Length: 221
Image (cartoon, rainbow, N blue to C red; front, side, top):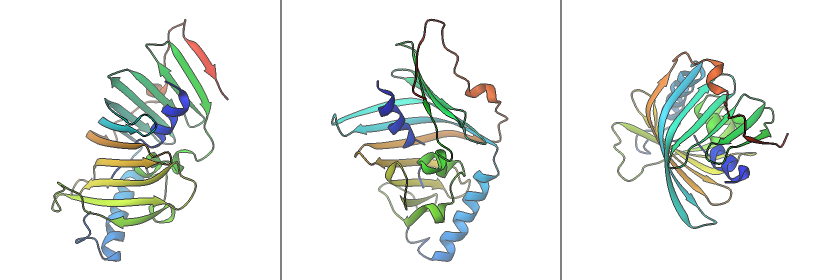
């Protein structure tokens, strides 16, 4: 799998959110966003399990994968796919590393200053000011229960790696439950988050990728 395709998919990984009837008023929406941003901005770390359903436009193909994600402020992120084909993507805030165990290949690319805040991930991890970074629109979705979830459609004002992001958030806990990301190439990623936990005491060691001695290293920095 090529690094560029993994990077594009993962940049659109991670985030989804309120019904139009309950948040139609600007004041109500602002109050909800204040609560949501405060919760994630104050959390030093985060971990969750995920199920990811991806549509790859160039191949007209759908794929499903499962795994876990970790985040440690500032700017440390680990995206670990466990099945069907394992690979790990991690950043220390300076470089992006992607390891494919089955191929014994580690690829490294530079990560520009503030890169995370320009992605969908930046939204979830409090690295982006929602109202300054996105145009926001309350939405309803099929199967969504207005009493328990809130939905938003976000379109980046500039400099993002995706066209739009739809997020569904638990009204009471403020946990992100589901998100759908449409990127600039027409690829669609739907992410379901489970066992979302904040303030779990993650260490920097969790964001280091350990590879076998015979691993091929492709350094693009």
